[in-house]
Length: 491
Image 1 (cartoon, rainbow, N blue to C red):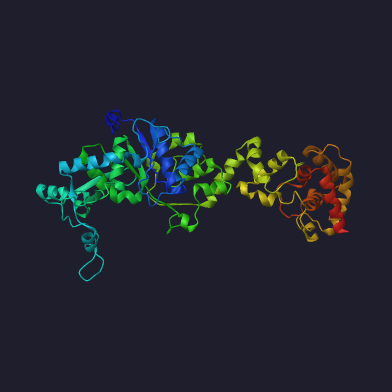
Image 2: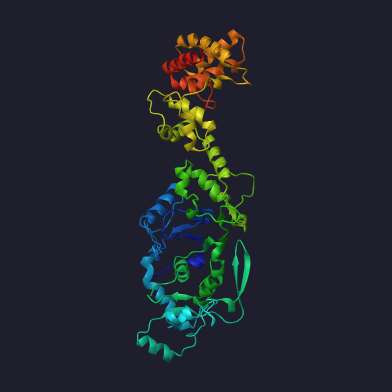
């Protein structure tokens, strides 16, 4: 393993997203990927994808594909990774196993680590007090001061062992985090953590440090649950004589003030949000704001704009509360900014789930839906009357504000029917001109005539669009049939 020689000299920014393939893409994981990506792009650096697959008990088949698919969908394209290679590969942790023990042995040789031969029975006994109560599970350093001869004898005899980090017993260790500032811990509180397990596999903490160094990682973004491990990381870097990376620890994304977002609690993953009708761009925009504040008032950003605007100083120490209302508002704003052609293309598959007729003008329908759509999955209630007129009560014709009732409504529909029967220009402009011409001729209020028309053609109290648009969407033949049925119901 050659690693990235010369990286510290060039100071080129290199960040990494290192997920474990355990299933879906959690919102917090995606935020880590996004921040990591933005730091690299903001500084003209490299964004690296590393798959940490050594925890086989949690490994989920197909999860690596979920990671690839999610990052590609969101535009978080990596510069180096398992699929495209790069100068610091392999980029799958299980393919890097051979080197970790070598690095651990170097620490033993330099006096910063030691072989521990304590068996499970002895280690379990440390977790219990004499009265059987649970004790603080901290290793008592029993093997820390074995002589070289004792160690060699046990190695020669094939006694199973782990390699532990030899923590300083006195003084303090201080590390700097870009979000939390300087944090100092008492060395006496640090456990002599295991670096290499009895099967020769590295622990998560040790593999992370070695991988990050050999890949030349300059900035590490992770959750603040790793703050307690940071002093141990620092001591490893110092023991090797390596440069410590810039730490950015982020507070968790919370469901509320007390509970973290969790798939087990039914909280949405990225895939769930897309399935609910959210735009990928809107989700990414919102996730960026979960714990990060831009300097100005702007909240709607493209990924390219985020890369320019993002600054580590804007990351908050406070937990971020996932707000579905805010996400929906951002999604609605993205929908409003679409061109009519783009929106029509996006919404058509959703409409097709409920509208099977082939004679519908989807462009007109889309133009009606666009200003009223927050989620693409909202479409059902707005189009469920198109294929078939629902059953409705005549009381629907009575509208206090429009000053309509059953008597005025049948009068309006009887006046409208012959006008629309004779109309050849069945477009929004043509129907509008015909109906508003009739309104002027009868000298009535708009609602007096249009409310009964909308009720008759939709059978609903709330619709996307008014009577004019609904007539055009349904087509002349269907519109006339529904108006005749309305007259019949009211007679």
